[in-house]
Image (tube, rainbow, N blue to C red; front, side, top):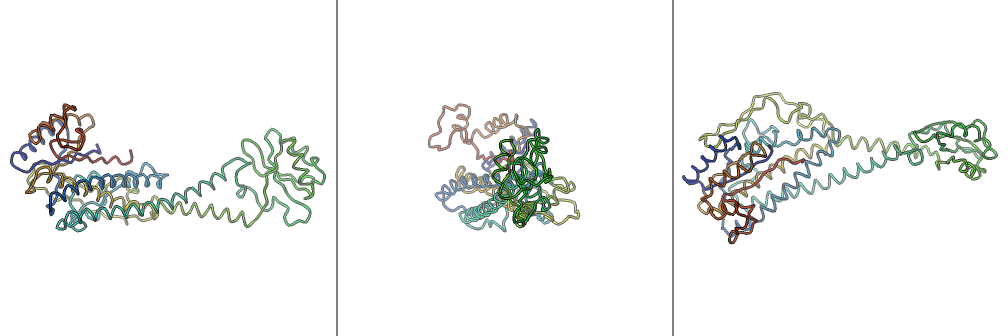
Amino acid sequence: MSEFWLISAPGDKENLQALERMNNVTSKSNLSHNTKFAIPDFKVGTLDSLVGLSDELGKLDTFAESLIKRMAQSVVEVMEDSKGKAHETLLANGGLKEKMKCLKIDLTSFVTHFEWDMAKYPAKQPLVSVVDTLAKQLAQIETDLKSRTAAYSVLKANLENLEKRSTGNLFTRTLSDIVSKEDFVLDSEYLITLLVIVPKSSFAQWQKTYESLSDMVVPRSTKLIAEDNEGGLFTVTLFQKVIEDFKVKAKENKFIVREFYYDEKEIKREREEMTRLLSDKKQQYQTSCVALKKGSATYRDHKVKVTPLGNPARPAAGQTDRDRESEGEGEGPLLRWLKVNFSEAFIAWIHIKALRVFVESVLRYGLPVNFQAVLLQPHKKSATKRLREVLNSVFRHLDEVAAASILDASVEIPGLQLSNQDYFPYVYFHIDLSLLD
């Protein structure tokens, strides 16, 4: 599953034992895979400031998740010829360890091996400053996303309009890719070539009657230059002064004169515009990126090792060395921007989750700061109800009223602003990586 539960409990001996019991039960019952989730020690400040930050982080969490989902959808739209590859494109920077920092790995691996980025978000800064840095980063990404996707949408719309004009029927479609200069009598003081749409069932009638529909029609001047399922496009040359009379007589016989004037410059301009738009759109996305060539979201020889809850030492995650092609080689600017900034936004989102756990844990469990955060990955959807029951049972002692209210929705928790179904005896946050569902 791409679903994670990020929880925390006090770090005293009793609750660490409770965490061990939870880990044993979930492991034996095959309910979830659990790993410790490392969160640095931040400057706490005042409890009043933490209450304000809790509200701000909640809004920022929602905004970040919405942003990365929009970016993921933009990747799908740009990769319209390779939608099945979009999941493989949505990657995150591999981590902070020396051997991983240049790698792009799948989102699940990033979450399960999360490490706080001290260089980008220094833990020694006040929490307000860290949150402000994250908020400004995401706001800038959203601003750039709006401008870039708007430009792409305009380009796509213009191209679609041109494509519609070239794929309609003979009454509405552009004729610039059908006609040629040789089909017309040009620069004549007296003669003009008209284009006439004739129903398929009337082709023979047209050939027999077109010369007599009006005076001054040039004999044997008709030629079929295009046809579709409904009819054909014929040329006919006549004297200019009988145009209106010819149109009336043609209409009486269900032959429709298509208003068209051959302008070589205009036709050339329209063809060049179509070529330019096709080229511009193609340049926004090309499929020769490394991840798609390899056919996998992560390299097969890239190995990471998960440390189960309870292991005293967490070994360094590692990988085998492998020659890599240049990242992003051959990609268009929009897709390249989306990949880079999706990774940045996703990483910021998981840092926001970590901050929420820290703030809520301090508010819930008090000072001094002492709690243990754990990441649970339910093995299957059907196991989530049982997993919740195990957690509520193990941590019931943290808040008897809240634990009871989960079983009895009619019980109200005094002073609690959240709905009962959002509140548990332990700190809990949900992470859903199903970004394209």
